[in-house]
Image 1 (cartoon, rainbow, N blue to C red):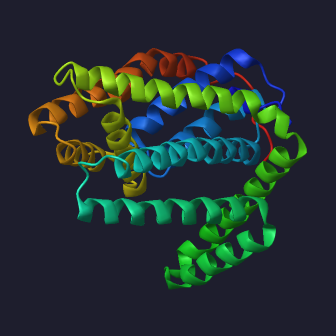
Image 2 (cartoon, rainbow, N blue to C red):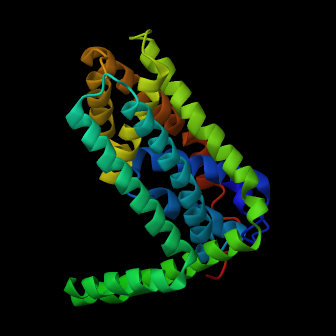
Amino acid sequence: MVALFGPMGVAVPRQPMMRIALLSIAVNNVVSFGGVAGYSLRAALSRPHGVAAGRSLAISLTHAYLNNLFMFLLLAVGVLVLLGDPTTEGAWRHTLKAVAVLVVAFLVLSTAALFSGAVRGVILRTIARLARLLPARWRPPFTAALDELDQALGRAAQALGRSPEAMVWPLVFLGVHWCAMVGVFWCCLSAFAPSVDAAVVVGGFSLSVVAGFASLLPGGLGVQDGSLTAVLALQGVAVEDAVLGALLFRFVYYVTPFLVTLPVYASFLRGRGGGAPAEA
């Protein structure tokens, strides 16, 4: 996250931005609603350091795009692994193939929306038309939010196109992050089912994370855990072991970082009077 500030043309001290990134990501894991919680907190905490809300949103969207690329790459690997498993049943195979088609469609659409102003305009105009169904008092702020989103996506596309080599370190960090997530889950599952194959772990984990992300529920609560248990059970893991592994991972990866970052948030509250707000 912090590695994106340079390519986006934002010159700020690295230490407070590291704390903001740590805090916003931990909050996003727990109370995420499509990333809105983390984006809002990041913008609010970055503002006293001279980061305009529009640029903060552009950085968040760039990070989200790169993060989603890794998430769906992991999903593609998981689907291929499960399709290559001879124990995977026929109906389950058809479901996995449908998931693969949806993944490709999402990646194509999201990439086109980011880098093509014409495609982005069509999507946003369609959303604006649908917004006419909302009460009249909600329409102006909703339209303003769409305009701000369009500008932020434009900034993100310009940054990615202007210096693609600057994205190397963010991609490296994201790759390490996703590999660490899989490794942590494998350790959690191994505490109850030590003989689970790596292919089953990758396949089940990738499908469940995407299911939780698509649900828009806080941290994918329930959806991620249930789908993870279901996929592992379909691949031969005992249901009770899958449930316990999923719950342990939920505590280790979601709850623990949130608790650890509470003192960081308290330090921001103590120093919230410093710094001047930036113009959007």
